[in-house]
Length: 248
Length: 362
Image (cartoon, rainbow over all chains, first blue to last red):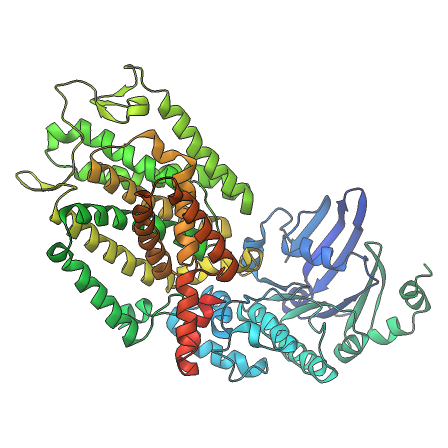
């Protein structure tokens, strides 16, 4: 048996790991002893019925909420107590479930704020010009965000997270409220990003979108890991079908 | 060129030649004011300009960063008292008030750093900040009102309770106007003089233009980011608490500047400046003009002050009418009268020119 080279071993090191993660809201365990690893460069879909703890899990990863107990690791470093902005500086990016774009600003200004983190102001127009076509938002630079369609606002929200050039991107329902065509385009955006080396975690209810991603799929249920595997395996898992129909 | 871009950036109304021609015209009309206004009116206008600094301070904090302070008059009062106390103590020694001016700006900023650190690092938001800042202002008033006892002296300054700040003994100097310069090269700007009027007008113009550059800079974008969605801004790696704290201190420094100018203008400062009414009045100025734009807030302050003065001669009706104006504006132009008028004017212009007004108004 061959020993993996140091490079391969490094590549296989989990970029994100949670151990025995618990989050209690008023007596309800939204996350209940969750253990999960995500390797560098992976694309992971996270599904589960309403109330499974998916969004809470992302909030705990990003540091928007603190866990009741358990640990969060980034490249093996304990980041459980780090505030959100420090995690962002380490390389974690998120798009929230609700859109969270700056409604009163233009598309350019929306992208300016995350881009300014890593770029000087005079470099930003160039960066925006590169980003907009990737997000299917060409020509909207000066447009006020509230004039964009729902799908365009979703892309902008994703784009703002991408603008930060994160190592790990967490997307909570990136295709919510999108047409079939827009959903397909969103899946393409994420796959392209993933090919460029960005580790991506996606929460989604739209099974067509999850099928398009065709990635490792993790099922959460009552705040615990319920099932894990390729999308085909999960799709054929009787137990997963049952929890979605409310039988477990 | 970069300065020009900052002055005419999208976070402020007025990008075209029309606005800047109007600005120049207003400055000329004001500069010529001593030619056609009485001495009494000039003195009043100096005071209106001082209100302008206070309005800009709240506009920056509330309009741009979304933090409503109901205690902006506290920093105004602290600035006024700090100026007075330092001036009374150092006047005989230095024969100018330069250090007192510095104290009038720095002391409120330091106090804001203390209060702000508690508020923002405890992640207080919205109404809690509004209440806390108002309570701080009222605490200052309560404390200063009970300082009539002669033991409340700081060197040559006697706090004086209800009667306000005054010299501790007849040998000490009186509370001075602004005395600028060093050594023997000093100039005294009496609050009733044309020189004071021009000094305050010039300073207000500088501060206004400086703030325009600030809100159109990267820092200004971050302020607006915090106003629009502070959680989202934090996910981009920005420590929102530090941004909020810094703008709170800057706003307090500006309010302190207004306070020290007020003390120098009237050579008088008293605990009433910390009362509820002055605190609310600042909010009315800024809300009536338009909180999300510096020009709108500045015009709001000067116009409302002028209207209140006109109404004051009619007796108690003044406050009633001011209240009615606020209610009417909130109902029909919640974004503020000046911003509403600017957006109406921009709707008559081609689409490209509308961009800036639309961003501010929405």
